[in-house]
Image 1 (cartoon, rainbow, N blue to C red):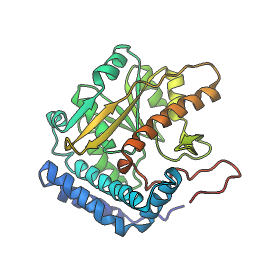
Image 2: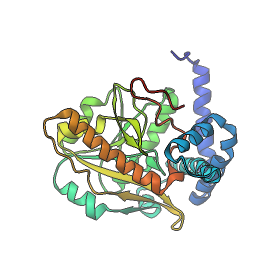
Image 3: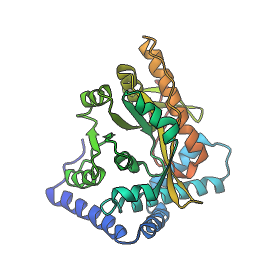
Image 4: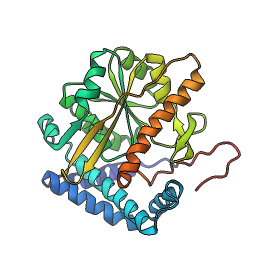
Length: 307
């Protein structure tokens, strides 16, 4: 059990977060993103354990690529995280009209609008990819309210500060502990819910599906919620497009699934399709994914750990 931190330390942590985000955010939008990118490139050397995890993940996912290519992807990962920090630093100053200017959405007319017209709940999923926090802001810019499943930060002061930015335009954050009943209710009433689908799951919370050809414990939540509510499952990824110098949000065709009554089989099939969708974007933009996370940490019973 982690040692309880003093009120003084919690306050210092909150102040540090406010200073970092505030300092980056005082500059014009593109400058803030570039400062964040520079910070990301710089901190690679300051967090060798994270870099080590990233290199190990690349050995698992891409065993045949060169050292130079691994280094390029790892550096790009930290730059992407830094750019994402630069974007977050602008949350307080952004207005709804800025979202339309700063972001391009591809696939809204083809995939979201038809799903919306059905009246069913829409379950968006994405990954820790590009700028995933934009999904707190993007739906309200189009006149929709979205509920986002989050992991609450273990410093309540920092959590309150971050949550105030996430919910600025009316989005609702649902902590995992208080979320279950509310998630079902939101979708059963035709609302929208967003979930991250790419983190390592504990054995009791997940199901093993292939990710880059290696079994990875993956959350069952998306499949279980969809099967219970009949929600439409819609993939969405926010990618930094260098040529356009902006984030582009790509919506993909809904995940096709059937409720056969065999829950175990249906959950496995849906989770496979969700994971394939995530892998598609990681392969296309490898330097924008969270390689510093131990994605293959949980192993099937009897199998040796990979880290």
